[in-house]
Amino acid sequence: MNQNWRMGLARHLLLVLAGSLLLGILSGQYGWSFAAFLAAYLARVLYQLYRLHRWLQQQRQSDEPPPEASGLWGEVFDSLYQLQRHEQGIRGRLQAIIDRVQESTAALKDAVVFMDSNGVLEWGNNAAQSLLGLRSPQDSGQMVTNLVRHPAFKEYFDKGKYHEPLELPSPIDDQLHLQITVTRYGNGEHLMLARDVTHLHLLELMRKDFVANVSHELRTPLTVIAGYLETLLEHADEINPRWLKPLQRMEQQAERMRHLLEDLLLLTKLETTSYPASNQPVKIEQMLHSIKSDALSLSAEKQHRITLEADPKLLLKGSESELRSAFSNLVFNAVKYTPAEGEIHIRWWSNEQGAHLCVQDNGIGIENGHLPRLTERFYRVDSSRASNTGGTGLGLAIVKHVLLRHRGKLEIQSLPGKGSQFICHFLPTQVAIASEDRPTERLKNRTGLGE
Image: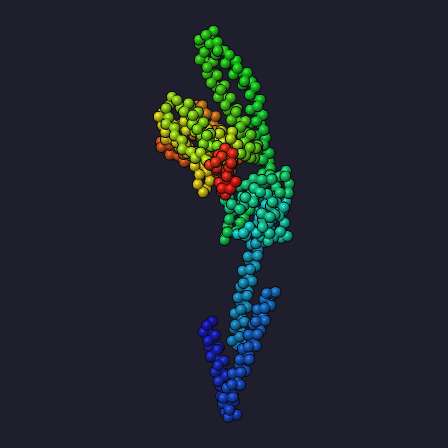
């Protein structure tokens, strides 16, 4: 192509020179003849450039083919025509793919929403309108957080951490419960999927109601049984000695069942309410001293060395009873699973990421494969360990839900034979600092240190 173009240009120049030379011979004015031929050639070039420019302008509105021409400009227009046909073919194939994708996603019952890197809506299928109220193309070009008006969704989307799905009621129908998943692709664009999980949500509510109702109903007969057992054991000298040990075992199991019911009721309460009713700053340092005393009593026979390092000015906003339940569960678990004369260290501190509580022990440790499931209800690393310690299997589940309600998270680190670390992380917005002059009355927000 380049060789043909050079030959065509050289031929045009030779024709100009030959024509100007012939005209110069006839007129005797060689200079003017060359100038006239050159001007005519430039005029033709400018005319073809004008035609090319006009065609390029028309290309924005239509797919008209390039103008026809001969010679060198004909080759230029033919090359443009080939490029145009090639580009039209690629565009047609891409449009066919887009049409198939849109047709297939439009048939889905789950909502599919495409957004750019800034969260601006580009396209959504039919289910996006019925589940989320997003209309395409009417709502295209708007921020999705302005269209799906829910505080939990805005916080979830703005954080950009989409490892876990978000569940929330549908913005157009409170009876529908949705599970939303956001995925990044390409150059930071967002793909959002929303599915109707109302059926699963109702089943979960039924399960919670069932557990709560059964727990409440079992409390009365269990109280009666425990009361009679206690009465019988108070008169142990009047009972046949062979019945003494069975009665003691029955009392132990009744006490264990009482703890189980209490934990189930607490867990149900944590799951059915979204945020603690009391959100006052709690003196964590005093609470930890109390928990440490209880832990020393619990480990009296094992003689654990329990140490505490806590900032007395560092307070945490939330429910004191719920936080005590969570922190005591972590400390008492360390006591249960740490051998005699072991070491347990409790630390309460803060940094720019927020406040943190760490309970560290040098106990038996836990294998990595069990760590992701430790906060599940009734999950047992080893059934023999549970029978030896008398635990209910709900302690870490309670810790997890308490932290979620206080906008915190639980981190677990453990090595078999080396010990474990359970670290609670709380956001700076949950932290408060007691002022030096009146620590029990005046509080300063940790983020702004203002009253």
